[in-house]
Image (tube, rainbow, N blue to C red; front, top):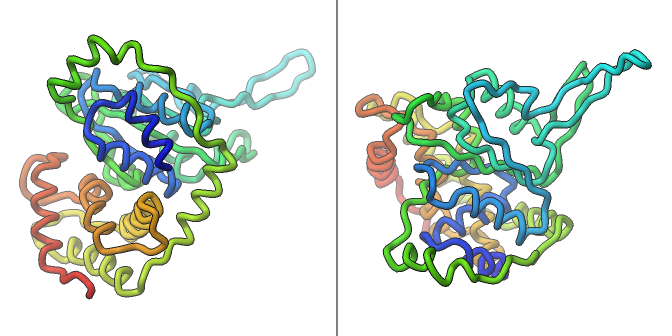
Length: 301
C-alpha cells in the first residue's frame, strides 16, 4: 500500500494521518465519515483514492429532496411487454462518495445506510448484491449549517471511522495556487483483485487474546460510567479490532500491537460515544471523556 499512499500524497496536501485512516478503512472493508466544512478537498481525495486503487467510482450529492430510489435504484415498468426491470442506482459501484449526507431527509439516509450495512438492495422481493469492494466515503457539514439533519447514533455506529480533514497549512495552500495545478495525473497502483487479496490478508492479521480482552475492557468502561448516555456497542468493539488489524498490515506487520489499538481509539469511537453533559455531537467533549475513561484501563503487557 506504500505506492497507493505515495500517489495520494501528490493530491492531498493536508495531514498525512488522514490518508492512513482512509487506507485502514479500505483494508478493513468498512466505511468512513468525513466531517468538515465545504472546500477542503473531500471530493478530490475520494476520487483520487478510487483512481489509485483501480476501482469503480460514483458520487451522489445528497439534497433535501433526494429519494431512496435516487441512490438505490428501483423497478421500471415496461408497458410494451408488461414487465418490471430493476435499474441499478449509483450505489452499485466499488467506491461511493455520499456528499453532504446530512442534507438528505431521514428516510433517504436510513434506506441508504441500511443498504450500506447489509451489502445489498432489495426491490420487489428480489435482493441485488452490492460490489464485494463496496466502500462509502460519506461527508457531512457541521450540524449548525442550514438544512442539515444529523445522523442518528444508530446510523453513525455503522461507520468504521469518522474524522475531520481540517485546513491545509499556509505552504500547502499556496501550492494549490501554483505547482499543484501542474501535478501529473494519478495512475492505478492496484486493481480490484489485488484489493480483495489485501482485505483477506487484513482479516488474517493476528490479534493476541490479551489485546482482544483489552478492547472489550475499553468498550465496557464506556458503558459503565455515569457520565455516558450511550457507550460503545459490541459492533464498535469489533470495528476497533478490525481497524487495528488493517493498521498493522498497513505498517507491514502480521500481528496487532497495542499502539494500533490506541492510535485508532478516537477515529473509531469518538462518533459513537454520547456523553450525558455537554453539547451533543461535540467531538472535543467526547474525545476528552474517552481519554479519561480509557486511561483507567491498563495496557496488556
